[in-house]
Length: 186
View 1 (tube, one colour):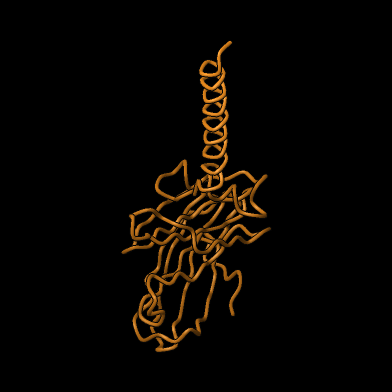
View 2 (cartoon, helix red, strand yellow):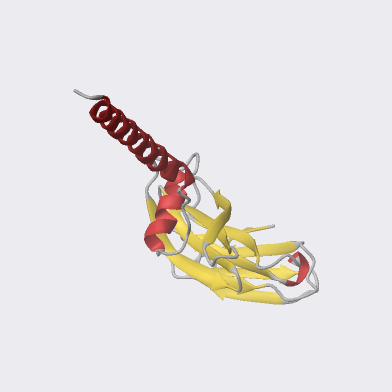
């Protein structure tokens, strides 16, 4: 075998090795660089299940609501009321920012900040599961405005309450059952 044939074989082997290394590098790095976004229902479930503490939990999405550049998702995590909040990035993808759940509850209120100006952009999101027996809530904000909200008992649901602007972050609650009996108050 002459030297030029040996050189061609060496070059081919080097090229094969380099191509193999490049393919392995990019296949491994693409897994590392793969980012989950909350752009649709399926990807939202993937994001939730990728978060520590939610990996092995059942996830039932009840509602997806977009408010400006925020996406808020009410869901049940192992039948516990929960929510996750996403923010839209510069590329238009939704990245998760906050997640919270209340174990052992059938009715949970979450205070949602719609924007960076927290005092004037507040909402209550109430997530219930099928064990909920609260039929009505009275919410008194400090400026003495009374907000009444009714709920379907024994239903999985997400309900939104707008908090009036210029309200303090001190609220008083009263919860009633379907017969109008007071269940609790603070």
